[in-house]
Amino acid sequence: MRGKTQYSFLNKLARSGGIVIWGSTTLAELPVNELLKNYDVSRYIYNRSIPGLTLSNAEEYLDVCVLALSPEKLILNLGEEDIRKGGDVSELIEQYRWLLYRIHLALPGCALIITGVRGSGELQHKFNSALEALAREFGCLFCAVDGGDTDEEYGLSFIGSVRLSLYDDNMNYTDIASRAVVSALMH
Image: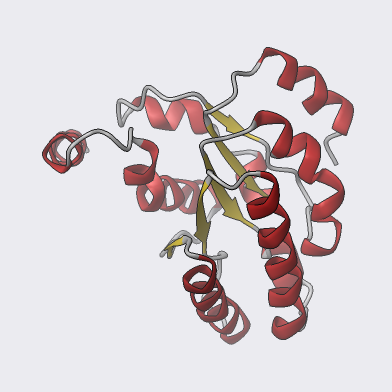
């Protein structure tokens, strides 16, 4: 796993108030900044995803990957490894709930966006449904990430699902829609 030391060093160069993407294996290798250039996103975005990260060990990385950056927005994509290993959905949701509680206490003004995990199996569907309910419970935005058999396809689906959350909150919806239309025309 990427070390806390590496992210601690990078955090010294980072600006607070940006957007943090925090997930596991698939997102750890996602070239976020390159993909976002296509959508004309001008925000500071930090990918603090860690290969192999599970909900059971996420709390030990919370300070260095999220809290140290004091983000304005946090996009969470956790549970991928847990579901892959056949974890119990109820237990995983309780771990997620505790993590959200910790984040809300430490960063009360941070907007949280929770994304569903990759996969189309019964366990993934059950977990994603429970995540969506958890997002409503905590007042978070939930983004389903559909499609993507390969890491690359999933990465594009992920960015497409969360891209509207990446623009400035004070930007009007006409500007956002215009960017989305231009982006769609370019592809």
